[in-house]
Length: 347
Image (cartoon, rainbow, N blue to C red; front, side, top):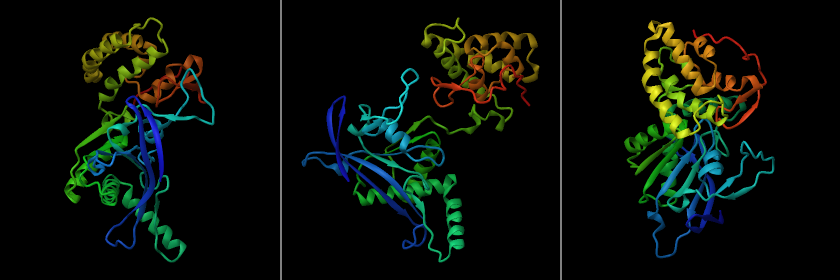
């Protein structure tokens, strides 16, 4: 446990930080199957307040299989790491500064690490090495599933509420990426199996429908939603690099135009499949090129369907660079330049 202070927009805030791990049990409380580690932040309040009634938010990243370090030190904790920006690269050691945008002023924060990450571990009580390894694999299989993962987090939350006497606190769940999938399953698990209500859920970079994943659209052939839903993102990244040069100067106006085009002419054209006339395909390819900087001929070769991995490779291919799939403002030298001028075939 430690004491800290953070400067927020509303002034300075004192807090208490605690790190620990809670054991998860199945039928036998004396033989836990795993531990989940956490870091919790509690706002320091005066003696007249009731800290047990203060809101508490349980926070976790996605992955699946990721610890909560990204939201913890990158977004929502009282301190954050200053990472590199596209125009100002930073080398280690990275400075740690007050996070003026932390949620700690409105809620206590509990960052939960998924099973098998950070200080959490699977526990085996077998006598010999082979049996311990077999038990560990079985426990991993039981936990590394949608239901098993939700069950582990639900056990953690109920134990945490008891340990810190926070059963009367307003409770919130905040998940990122796969953590949004977890949040939906977790809220149901808490309600149905543990009789625990939550006051609200917060979905960051929601990933509730894998059918619209532009990174792997080929996993669900025949579904065109990923392509027209991703087009505004492509346009925004191209706008950042001023590529093509004749793209609209105002990003807000551009995105409004692209969104209307995506949900209108582009979506309607994709729905026609092989019945789309070649002349109309060529016209759409020219418009797509204007928005994205990917040449019209590439859009035609791709049958008007460019996936996320292909876009980040092709956008700056003439410069030999690849754009980051996590943050389009970042770019780096392409290790594999075979896509330069390559023909894209959609099976």
